[in-house]
Length: 124
Image (cartoon, rainbow, N blue to C red; front, top):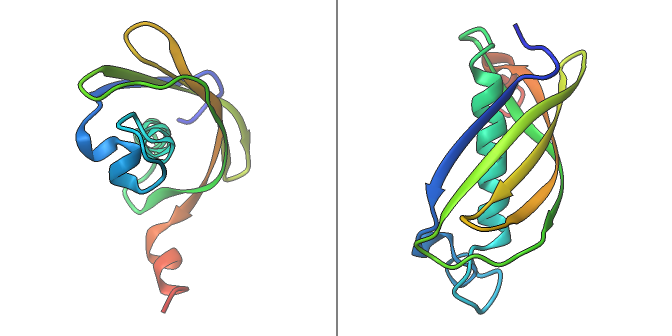
């Protein structure tokens, strides 16, 4: 059951595909902000999915993120997501990302719980 206070963390190694150059979001060979945000969203999604029925998923609806320090490729990064608010089917998460030495990103992310079939049928 989803409840405030749940948390989930995961780690990854920053790859060349995660860089600002690869994402087209910058000209430096560093962990791209869009890649960091995707890592944050994925961590939140995995946290929520552990507690949902098989016909449900979550979709991202907002991000409020600060990328506070650059990280080079081949460095390990860790994301920690904590569920801080539940408003009906809207979940709010606090997310923090660390490299091997420092906090590199922080902020908030919201996801909505949806029925997969109903959600997809509205897109046709």
